[in-house]
Length: 308
Picture: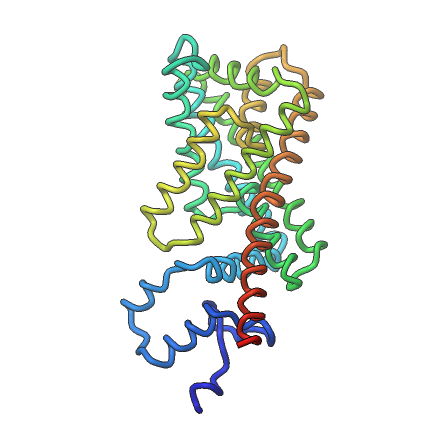
């Protein structure tokens, strides 16, 4: 009888709201009542179930939305600067190859594309595309308001751009050492060559992959698994030539600072298009669909429990 009276709690340790008890949450409560919490058990519990991952995503989204603006701002600038290492790596590789967009050369360029992303995401700095989806979960769950979400996005986007422009300036200034100027030109041409609708769809796919990567990273506490997940997701983005708003912005900034031929208006319009595509890809294809299918399964479980 005492076990039945225990309040069900989520993976974060907070009580679940009335009416949200699921089969998974009941299993968790039963485990906590029967086993002593030790290090081995806590490791075994590492977000191995979709219900647990969703709880973690909601908690992380709430944490980011509630962070002070200045803290978000500094973290976003740091993320933009760190992602400059992806542009450095890709720019150098593209400069070394005769036709970086063809054949095996394309594979080599894609192989170095994830390096800055691994550093950026593991450093836990505020990268726009990573948090695009995560911050949507608490809004969908009714625990945060859209105003807070828009505030987060606005601060992070601007901070990423400032950090990205700073890193691009440093890369161009260090050109005598880096020797990637030709690569920046190739990368900028790749961005500016396409029509707006093609850019938008490409950016949707990139945003989808980045948000999916953030979801997978939350599913494990293993650093090695997180690195592999980030690498796979961003390698696919690089291999497919898909457009990432922050990395692409740094590429465009570096090319604009290196070559007079690039038009500032074209660069701004391209960045806006890619930002919107990343936003749609991350929010709709991952946050909405993930949240929808998990909450639907939970509702089905509750209905089945009531009938039984």
